[in-house]
Length: 414
Image 1 (tube, rainbow, N blue to C red):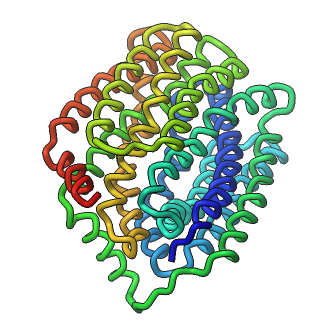
Image 2: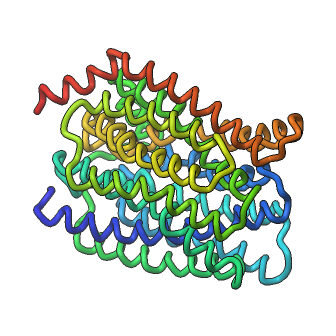
């Protein structure tokens, strides 16, 4: 049962997520710089990102089913607490010598396996705590915490990694797990777990989650399109670092990433305070089209000022798009199926990251070598091409009657 204190408990849970995102951002930034400085390869940077991401993706569906079968807050505590094991392993290998690439990949993969429990349980807990009117505000704040790994972490990591090295960043990340564990434990103690009246098998739970997604063709189409969008956004996430590091240092990279992420902060605050009341499908398509335009500008020239401007504008579009995607999916799925449904939603919508992470680094290295322009400009060309394709996808989304119908039905319900 949702009470007036639901949003207060959400804020406590969200604060723990914010701290966790900052810690994870320190590790992500540090490992990216560490590997690029050692190898000079965008492909190897992307490989570490892929292997850290893939377990979370593959396990998101069973994790979603578990979120509906067991206490969601307990799953979050287990996932967050145990994910520190992988980071601790990387730290130990660095303290005993220079780790091989496979050891870094193993550590981030182990961390990712346990982190897979977090996302479906966290999203379903948001639905447990809040009313429908609070969803877009909560998602704006969630986007804000997600932006912390790009806004706060890079500038901190950029300053610390030079004089202290990556080991300090990993240590700080490990310490943040204790804080996030405590906030989740507090919410778990304050709010009883939802009573599960049905006894059902794991496979049956998975089947219901799939049917919840497929029962509305507009929702399924929305999720498939979001997977394509993820592919293009994943390209800039992977290749922005080798692009910038090819002509400047890690401190400037940290500053640049922070300035770019300010765009996400500004619009996340706007969405968190005001929300988005109508025409979610139109706002979604327009924000993605503009994001594609700004990706092209981001890749145009080796100039920190231009990169900061277009990066700021690119990130400013993401909270609008994420809030609309979240709202259109959340309001068309019954609450009792939210955990298992979000497992499938997370799985399908993030499939696009696999080709982005697997191929973008290889393409950047190959284009840079073949054209004789280096990995930096090779990365820029791939980012620009992804921006053009994102604009094309947003146009298809804007004119889709199935996506528009999701908006119309929500307005009729209102």
